[in-house]
Each structure stands twice: as structure tokens, then as C-alpha cells.
Image (cartoon, rainbow, N blue to C red; front, side):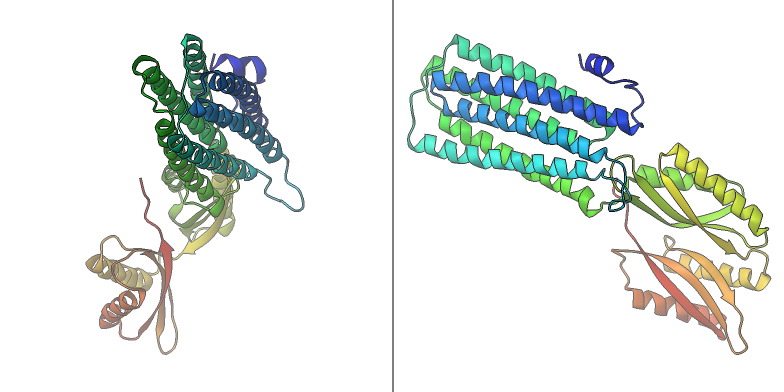
Length: 391
């Protein structure tokens, strides 16, 4: 069933890199959510009224909010599919992140509402009257929610949608909630111990925790999170695989939503090679990477002097000095500008954000060691802040 629905309702369903196919998945998930959540909500509210279980009624209202979330998801995918315009030149894909954030706040709202209801139920408990029909309805709703969870999770992973991932988590919460309520009603039925209020509080606290976690995860891409380390590594390796590329640095990734990724990078080439030939290679790299990784790559070409003996001798000494200070230190854009009174040694040094030595101390240490060897040289070091990858 998980694969059957996309086959039936989505044309070219396997081509997930196509924005129209991706949006069709989102729309299908939204419509399924609206229909199934309204059905489950009606079942639980009716069952809750007849069994006088506040926890079950509250859970039914929770599913009603899930139906609203599905409507928001549907709207989100419709808006995010709009093409770029004058006011939004990079498209509207980030609206999908906003959709996920709204759903996360809805989850949090439901959790706090349930908490209040549970506390009231503990203070003023009411008799709960479950029966076999009530149990059957709850089990049916749990089965539907399990199917929902796997469907949303499958679609969310397939098209890399934060909104659908948030919705799948919400469905998992509903499974846990309904199962907990079922257990509490079974305890009432067999042992006549009323745990309805306490179970409502326990479930609400779990939902609140999940809502806060979802808010954190959906806000991150809106603020601008670090790119996937696999993407940066693969792009770097692919660029370095081209003959004629001496190095790569200052690789920056900007994401404007799923399927809308822009990458800029500085690529070092031999300054002695004809500039037209090097530019031709850069164009080829841009086309290759953009097609392979479904991104938009722009490269700045950095010509590097490789045949000047004086420059190479200084570079060798700088290599040794940096290796003594810290073998992990890296630099780029190395060049020597000769003058009448002194020579300028210029390079960019990659500086980790949490590095053990301050910029000032590191600059002074490198300068001192270089001047011991080349007293007439002046060092000009630009620090490039880098962030450690977290696996």
C-alpha cells in the first residue's frame, strides 16, 4: 500500500528530482492525512463521549489538529512549488520549512492543552465506562496511525521533506498516545482503577517534549544550518579529480529549500597554463558538478605560481613552520609579492572556530618563525573561519 498509492496517483513517481513529482508526493500525503485524520478523530471523540474518557476525547481532538496539519502541509507544498519571481528570485521552496514549523507549534499546542485537561481530570475524576466496542475502535485507529507513520516517513525520506518528517513524528506520537489510553482503559475494565487523568498528563508531557524537539529541528534550516558533510566531501573530491586542479578552498553551500542548492568555491590552477584553457576546465567542472549533485555551482579561479623557485622555497619553509605549530593547519592562496625594500608573503590560513590558540597569538608565532628565516619579508595573513564537521 505504501508504494501502491504513489504508483496510482503520481505520474513518473520514481523521478523524485523533478520538482513537480516531489510536490505531487506532498499533495498526496496532505490529502491522505486530511481524510484519515478526520475519520480517526470522529471515531475517538464518539468513543470518548460514550466511555466518558477525557483522555480519549482529547486524543480525538489531537487527531483533529492533525487534520489541520495535513491541510497546512498541502498548502505548504502548493506554495513552495511556485516558480521564482521578481521578489523571490530563488523560488519559494523554503515555505516548506515554514510549514514544518507551523505543524511543530500545533503539536506543542495540543500537548499543553492535553496537560491542562489531564490535571483537571486528576483533581475531579469521573467514572470511565469502556467496553469491547470502544476497545475495537481504538485498536482500529492505532492500526491506521501505524500505516500513516510509515507512509509519511517513507515519503519524507524519499523527497527529503522536513514537513513530512515532522508529520510522521506526530503520527508516532498518536500511536503512543492511543496505546497508552488503550492500556489505561483496559486497567479500568479489568481492575476498576481509574488512571485516565494520570495517563493524559503523561501523554501530554511526551507530546510537549516532541513539539519542542520538532521546533528546534525545523527552525535550523530556516536560520541556515551547516551543509551535509557528505555533500561537501563528495563535491570537493569530484572537483579535485579533474586534472589541472591544484587545490580547492572557501567552499560555501547555500540552500533555499529542497532541490535548490547553490555552491561557490575557489579552485586553484597553475598560473603558467593558458587562461583560456583553465577557464574551459572550470566551465566543465561547473557543468559536471551541477548535473551530478543537482546543484548550481559557481567557481572562482585562483591562479597559483608553481614554477618560481623563490616562491616555492618560501612555501616549503611555511609548510614546515605550520606543521611544527599544528599539523592540522591548512592554508591557501599563497603568493609572494617582491618589493624594493621587502617582500610580502601573503596567504589565507584556515582557522577553526574553536581553535586552542587565538588569531593574534597564532599570527605572531608564525610571523616570528618566518622572519627568523626571511628577515626582509613581511607576512600578510588572512584568517578564514572554518567550522568542524559533526558526523
